[in-house]
Structure formats: structure tokens, C-alpha cells
Length: 142
Image (cartoon, rainbow, N blue to C red; front, side, top):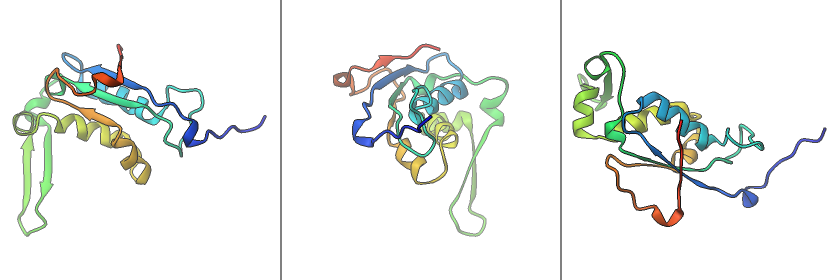
């Protein structure tokens, strides 16, 4: 059997819409990462960008299980001595409501040039409005 390689020009990219309200943050991120990679298509290959665009609305209203609101910690460092900052999920949602979803999706994509290019295809919004109505996104239910 011959291996089929898809040319990037021939790939038709669709737009998908995921409403994260009331859904678990990790499950929404996993579904988004699957669509971004193109794993839902028959012509998937791991080294090409064959995925689609994903719009996530209500990212701030995604739920988490257990005590993650208090126990999950996001770290960042200023690169100065003693510059380690820690922030809980609860405070991060108040400061940057889309960051936990971005962080989860980015961690599920490849860590290199391909992953950076794939991450540009996801649009995350804290509220229910988004400016992509002209693309006629397809609603995803899971």
C-alpha cells in the first residue's frame, strides 16, 4: 500500500466552536487539541498541520474537579533571584480568565515549531461572544 501525503495547499480547514460552560477544563482542552492536530481526519500524519480552527467560548466558566481551585498552582519566574511567583487557579481565573485553558491546550500540543504553529489556530474567549461568525463554525458536542 502506498503512503499518501497531503499537500498543505489542498487541506480544507474548517472552524469548530466549543462551549466550555459547565464542562471539565481538561476534557475541553483534550478535544480542542485533537481537532487542532487533525486527529479526527482520516489523512492525519503526526508531522503536518492538517488540523482545523477551534473557537472556545465561556472558557472562564469551565469547571474543575476536586479541590483544584485552591490546590492547583501556576508558577512563573521573573529570572531574578527570588523571583518565583505562584498563583492558584482561582486567582488566575480572576486575573486572566482564558489562561488556564490556553495553558492546558498548549501542554497537549507538540513542544516545538509545529506546536507553536498549531496553537495559533485556537481562539479562546472568556465570555459567550466571539468575532468569528463569518467563518460559520460547527458546534462540537462531546
